Length: 193
Image (cartoon, rainbow, N blue to C red; front, top):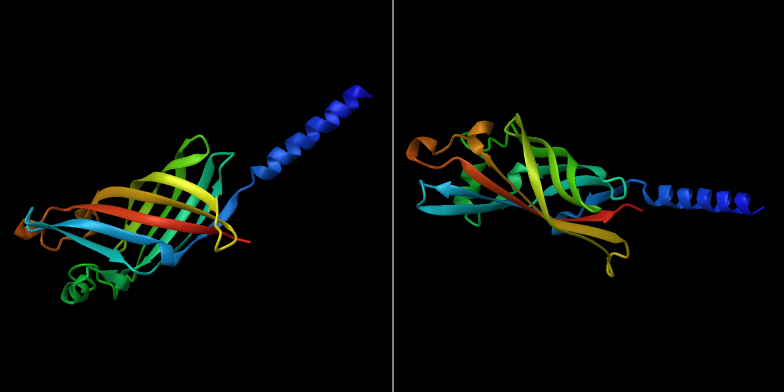
């Protein structure tokens, strides 16, 4: 009788582990998610900083299996430099061309973990209709049972660097602007019920 009891106990434990290892879906909280960027102005004269005020996305994460996916969509018309004239120019055809390319997207998979915490995502960044592979570094990843939302919420700081020239964002390069852009995303995502 003892071997059967042990076998049943082991089977129950395996089912519990399998149930805990299921992928979990999280929706980005647009009120706590801020894609921002830094770009050169006149070859080192200053650094322009901007953000996008509207974004959405979904994260599917299986921490036990150390797998998952992430999809983020940014509304280009929501660009905000804190400078009205620059905001108007940024959506014009010679910069983001928001009329033709109203969104930017990132679709990737988690490619590096520290224990059950994702540290890196690699995937496709699409901007101005051009798609390139990028690696996103994930810092300060944390999940809590949120006391106000009454659900699990995960948050992180995500960053990457790329050349805007690779995406056809050529404005100012002939005047000495540097093409490197640093993209940072402060993100929080709420577990679906």
